[in-house]
Every structure is written in structure tokens, then in C-alpha cells.
Length: 401
Image (cartoon, rainbow, N blue to C red; front, side):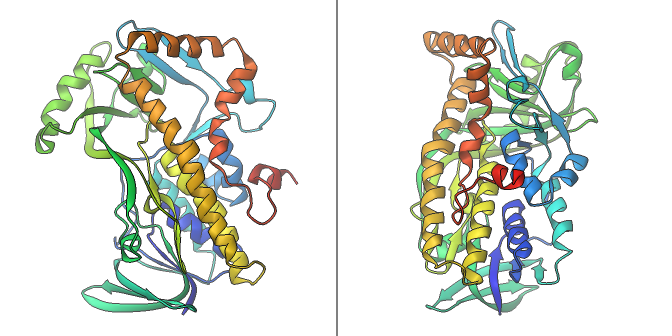
């Protein structure tokens, strides 16, 4: 018997476990994989979320494992124009005026090390969720480990098992929304972009649009482009060289470290709470990753949910606070995460309307000469946060107190 059982040992599940453990709540985590698995997905954390990561005690270790970045650019493929933003406009409102770059697997490893400090946290690797039943007082979860059945009983269950969440399906929830007609093709390549004046950011073009981002200090970069899902998935590797060679500057000599491809969605569950089961991260909502709002949104789920659920477990709040968690996080997905991510994708990958593109570029250029407009733009990721459902204060305000 445990107070909270979390299904999914990725960054959102582990961060939720850490928040609960810090509040003195016994936690059990079930993860189907045998260990943290590398996946070329989220790697960037905007400056507003750093206060929350610091509040959870993991920021310094994240910075040590990754690197910070001050600049982001929009490069127009057809003209070569490059519009570069830095964080000057927020230097008077934060002592961390930068974004942090760290692969989500490395984030998970950092959080896992912090979890090892808590005796009331148990993680079962290689344990696959198979089903659940819930009553008014608890949830019985069934799983499979090494071919043998496993049963766990918990007061509460958190589904953090990704976009195909088996827990979400077990409580009868579907993901409403749509799937994009393009897939993302993700490559990790070694290439000296900086030699040719390229920054981390975006390559804007309706055909050759891409997200280009420096992964580490060893010369490895993430180069992500889009292609129609009508192209055969099994031959994606054959199309990568032509695309990359078309857009790379200079000698075009690159080394492909790995590649993968996945469909993109804008979908959310109708509710993030069914009885004693709560949803967080991709199990609750999925978005195209152009703005980097997917994992950040999931981490903000962890911040809000772990505090609220700890209050319920310790009988300092009624369980209606969990309905407020569901409502607030879903509202932020619908009003912030999804529309901004959709607009980012439109600009980078669907910029075929020249009149619209001209207006977009004028806005990007003009912001550089308007500190207040730039500050507002750089602060957009702060809207992903749900202030404390107990005190109403943001993590930045709590850290400053």
C-alpha cells in the first residue's frame, strides 16, 4: 500500500514523485522500461521555468549536466536573413536570463539522483501497467514484471505514461483534437553550424523549414524537419541526406548520429481527473514541439499536481483541489500551449503565404527595438504555469519570499 502510485518513470513522472517526496508523501513509481531510455525529444527549458526547477532543488545539477543559451534566431531560408534575439530585455526581472538545454533523458537522470535521497520512494523498473480498478477509498493497479503478475494498492494514481497512456485508456478517456498531416523527422548531427554564423533556433521555409538546436558543447546539434505523412515511414532515412545537404551551409560535411520520426498532434483528454486517477504530461495533453512547450507543460503539471496532491494526502485540502488542477491545466493547454505551438509551427513550416510571412518578419524585427515588447515575448512561457492551487503564488514568488 502506498499513498501515491505513479505510472511512468519519465521526466514528468519522476518530477511529480520528487515533488511528493519533498512534501513527505510515500510514492511508488512503475516504469515499463528497465532504465531511463534516451529519446531525441525535448531539450530546451525557457527562463521562466527555471525558478520552479530551482524550487525543486534540481536546477544546479541540470545546468551542470547541460548548458545555457542566451540567443535564439529565425533564419529565412530563401533570403539568408537572420533575426537574432537575446535575453537582454528580461535581465532586470530575473537572475537567470537564459534558456537551459538538456535532453529529457538527462533531466530524468538528474531527478532520479535526487529521488534516491528519499526512503519513502520506490521505483519498480521493468514493470508494465496492465489495468486498474478503483473504489471510493483506493486504486488497485495490476502490472507485469518479468512475466509475472504484480498488484499494487494506492490511495491515488498518477498517469505519467506518455501520449499512448494505458492508464488513461483504462479509465475510459480518449484524446480529443487532431493529428497534423506532416511528421517530424528528427536528426542528431555533428556539424559546425556556428562556424557559419548559425544560432540555435528556426529555419523558416514552407519546404525546408527546420528546428536547429545545439544539443551539447561537443558539436552535436538537433536538426528537425517536417515531411508529409504520405511519404513511406520505412524510407525516411533515404530522404534525410537530400534535405540536410540542401540547407546546410559551407562544405556540408556532417555526421548523422541518429534519426527518428514521429507524428505530431494537438490533442487533450476531456478531463485530467477520473476519481482517484490523475493525468499529467503527455498522458493528459500532447502538442507539436516547435515551441518546446510539450515537456515544459508537463513539468508545470508536476509542479501543480504534486503540491495539491500532497495537501490532499496530508488532509490539508479537500480532494476538490484536484478538480481545480484538472481544470486549470487543461485550460492552459487549450489557451496557451496548443495555440502558441500551432502558431510557431505555422511560421516555421507553413510560411508559404508571402504577405503573412512579411508581417511575421516585420513583427520579429520590430521587437528588437522595443524592450517592452521583447520582454513580453520572452515571458510567454510563464503563462504555462498554474500558480499554487493552495496559496495562489507562483514558484518565482515563492522562491523570492
